Image 1: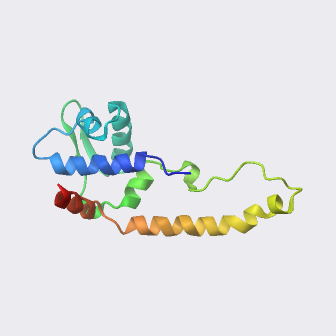
Image 2: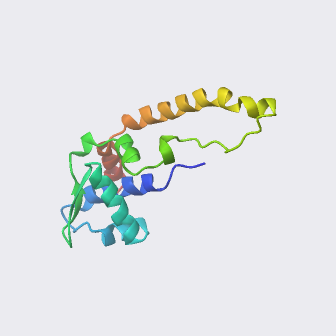
Image 3: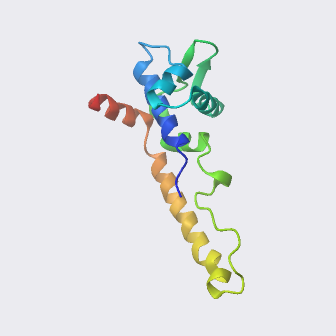
Length: 142
């Protein structure tokens, strides 16, 4: 099980928007060339980020930019914006555990609370990492 690559792609996109905002028009084509993905994927993610209030997109060749300071955008904001997990649950259960098996009958009671706590812990950690921190790390490496 993995979190969708939409999450890391969206982070990549926001870093590009900030890194190149003064030197390039940051369009879906430009972002796609950096991510090495289809521009259609970039446009879909841009719309999700825009809907969440994280980016502004100017139609045509205007480009995209962060809608607020990077210090105010967390990894949790991005994670939630691009719908990284279906139905909000990080862990997906197999559909039909055998109710006649003692393990199958009790697997939800054994795991549900623990998995919810694990997801909550991960989301709490995402809440404390800002795009500004990542941008500064990227600048140091570049």
